[in-house]
Length: 231
Ligand code: CA
Image 1 (tube, protein in one colour):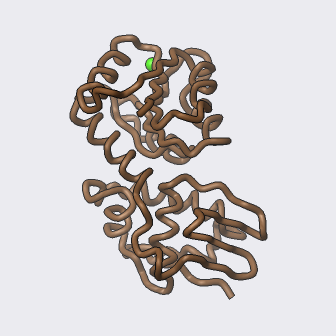
Image 2 (spheres, helix red, strand yellow):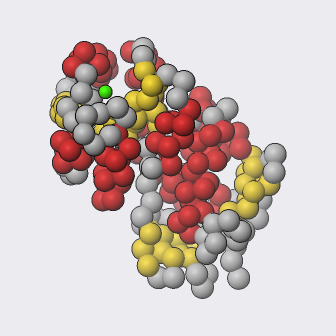
């Protein structure tokens, strides 16, 4: 496994490296000390995970994330300052898979990293029931992980794709918030409503003709979300 750490503070880098090596003695670690280096290294094809600090000299972590996401679905965990809810939400909006607030403990970091890797590799459960969804506007090939809107391919991260899958395979039924969080992110995320809100918005921006008046992913207020098949 190869992990990229984008962080300008040497002691934070060393603490992270120590934690990762404790869990995965064979891990390869690449460090980028500023944003530009981070963008370059983030495009390396063999990176399995990126730990990305937001406060970086030059290009900040949000810009690095945006650049990486142009071409790569690599799992990204952002490191944010404690209590900064806006940073957390913004990171998720830009395509981060998770976040850890500084200062974090060894166990917190490992728990998040493991959860993110698990999600990136999780197979779609129940694929046999629904391998493909298609209407005049939207096509989803679940087996091939391909989404097309008006015939044009749209790029999805593994977490986005899994959320779409959970909704589509239960088309016509409300899927409660808690269930979506547990199935897509993991049991320990059942109360992280922010993740779901941000990701549903991202799915809508990608597949809805008008994200503000959704036609596929409907909000069932206070209950959950429901996927509605198109005509
Ligand atoms: Ca920093």
